[in-house]
Image (cartoon, rainbow, N blue to C red):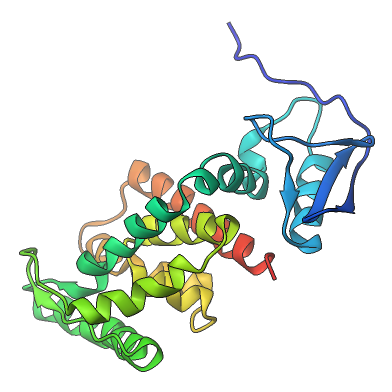
Length: 235
């Protein structure tokens, strides 16, 4: 039996200003979230991007082709009701940031990690006055509490939409510093994703590509870029 999919029921997706932001209309009817909340968006640019996703749907609705809509739904239905908890959960990544855990060998990989990742830790220190230390191996290293607090502080000021996008940037890369680098405009999404994949790309160079792993990596890469784009549409 084929999987059931909702069918398109509208002709035109448009946007209009409302109290508190912007909304998307399908033939004049406002879009709501899966939890039936009003989909009120913080910027016209984001509203138009979401309207474009709805307008681009074919006869059957494909949620996978609507990343901005999904993130906005998550911001309203999930993040908004537990914003503080989400912020603290993401802040905790600073204590185990991927950039801080380095290979013990071979020497070529160690050198590549240092060359590529050390400048990011330097940037975080210059931008946030937050110096994280790196360690060879996987044993936990205690980071300076004040540094972690300074990296966490911006998250507590983010609204649910920003936090939803930031969540994906952190969770997909494994790095609080990389997420900050993208949202601060220090790195583009493509470069940040490449840096987050340094170890995996090294393994591919040595042993070749696994098709299943590569397909998963491409899905995560697309989601990372979607999160970066969502963030850029908030302003």
